[in-house]
Image (cartoon, rainbow, N blue to C red):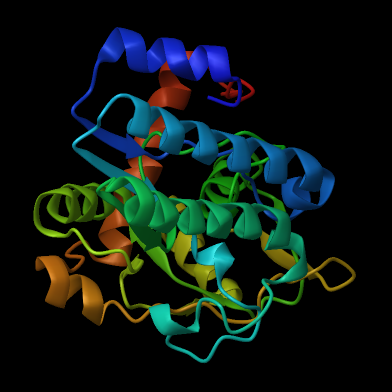
Amino acid sequence: MTRWDDAERLFRDARPALVFHLAAEVGGIGANRANPGRYWYANLMMGAHVLELARENGIGKLVVAGTVCAYPKFTPVPFRETELWSGYPEETNAPYGVAKKSVLVGAQAYREQYGLDAIFLLPANLYGPRDNFHPTNAHVIPDLIRKMVETPEEVVLWGDGSPTREFLYVDDAAEGLVLAADRYDGAEPVNLGSGEEIRIADLAQLIAEVTGFNGEIRFDPSQPDGQPRRKLDTSQALKAFGWHSTTSFRDGLRATVDWYRGVRSRAGAVYTPATP
């Protein structure tokens, strides 16, 4: 999707009436620090290509997934959609987050000039079966699951464990996307989240419980923490298209761990995910 010819061929072959633009290049803090230029370019180009091809092909509805990383570093909690432009994103997330915010501007501009029915959703950090578990660019939940299953003696987390995050189970996110496609046609972005905020230190303990990890959990404060807090106000999603999350965090984690262990057992003693 980052190359025009490939994106054009996809639209030509699929001939869609409805498009969900969920593609992204992104990772955890380490991957974000290592690839700021790539993540800015790739996400900006994918979004621009999808918007222009949706216009050219007369797409009936375009649903674009943005990111919680687009919010300013010190957004008041819970994050409300009206705060999206009140400051600059946290530094390690900024290239990715700003690229996604630019796609929001494009979606609103295409709506205004061409009448494109493009909507923009802002999901919390997603997790669930079939997540990216690769050692170089996995997000915190799949990364911790992989480490606690593969290395039962010790895991080391970046930062001091104090930042908070909000996580949304993939099935709940999918339901929100479909409901929004069917019921929402506004220009303003809408949050999708669980409404639950958890400290990274507490997250590590919870994943240890679910995986049965009995080793040592250490923190490396010499490494960055990322954004201090994340928690979304999801009242607009309920109001605009009747959506709210239903999966408990523990149940979602258990399903994710079970999936990973199943894949690992089928792949052999050590499961090495393919590089994305």
